[in-house]
Length: 142
View 1 (cartoon, one colour):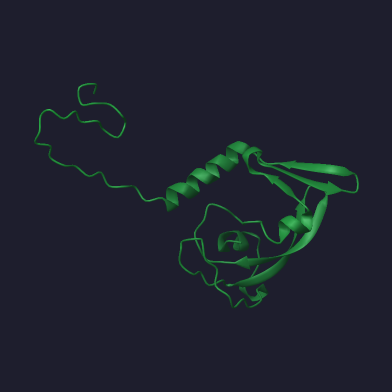
View 2 (cartoon, helix red, strand yellow):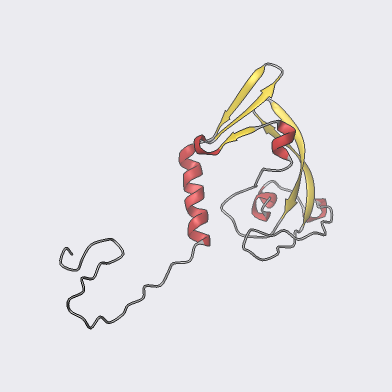
């Protein structure tokens, strides 16, 4: 869970339990968690208690639910369709996410983490060579 979401839930720093192991993979450097907290998560009609590790890293996401939440809920995530399937005592339940909102969130996350590549230019001395730009067009087509 990202600290922004943690604060928006009205939780205090004192509510966190100590967490001693660093996390990696968010920005390719170890991130030391601020702590951990157990919270109840509800998807559809099902509720489970999950331990969240709270980190102070900027993100357009609120939380990342994966392990151990997926096996506890017995969820089958369909990320392409923004859909979760899981068994309940009444049969298979489906929880669908707003695809437009999810796309906007993904785009915001990519913009904040991607580096723009610098365009390199080179002088070409031989006039017999046809130059093609990154978009696939030749200089004459432009």
